[in-house]
Image (cartoon, rainbow, N blue to C red; front, side, top):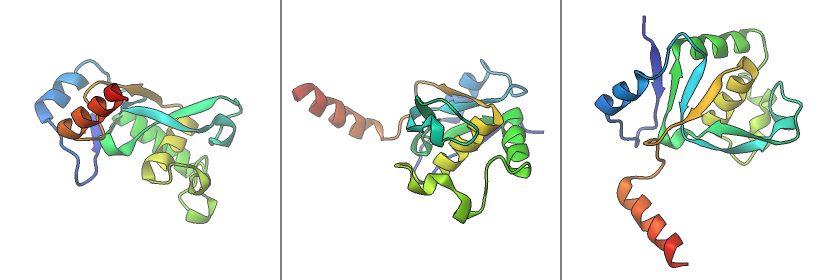
Length: 139
């Protein structure tokens, strides 16, 4: 039985040795998702949330790693209809982030999955990141 599930886009680079080393710090029996946290939506719009502060989610561009327990919790949330898989019911269609990562983020919130940001999960290749940082520094 696998301890971790890794979701990546077809243009995402994964360094297996570095990822394996990182995952040694986490327990796959705990509900945890690892990636790069980004601002998502107001919490009152998030499934199962009543707070008015902004909810963070893990952006899919840099990859998302779910523990075995997190995947099971998301699956159960779908089965219990706490997060819908029917497009007409999806609240994220109206959010700024509309992809599967937004849907998964909403389901992780509903399932009580802890979302952790880790260095190394970057949505842009290193060269593009350097150019972006240089432009920020110049302005």
